[in-house]
Length: 109
Image (cartoon, rainbow, N blue to C red; front, side, top):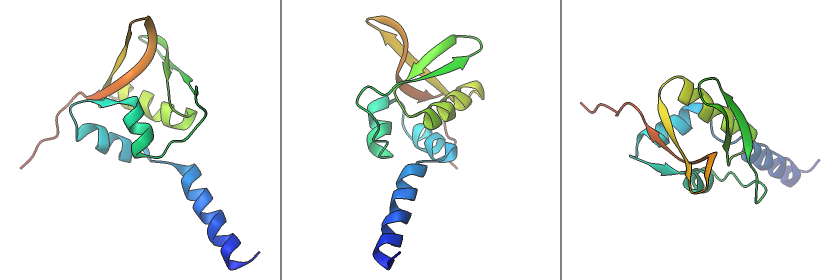
């Protein structure tokens, strides 16, 4: 493997890893509302065109998040922990997430 191939493999690996749950939480809490397409753009979550992941939320049943499975699970855990809330589609009425928002504002000293 040449140096160029090694660097390219590392860049692909970094791109596939994506954001951490802490990075998602920090970004969402820094804004009053974040549409899902902005999360995809901000964190370069380039998946399939119609990529949607089902996430089981005990109190709500199954909701669908338009992100890769890993990031969808991060969103679900942040909702379960009470850090963020989700806005579901109203037209049509479907359990698909269209945006997220912080539940507890960030305190500034």
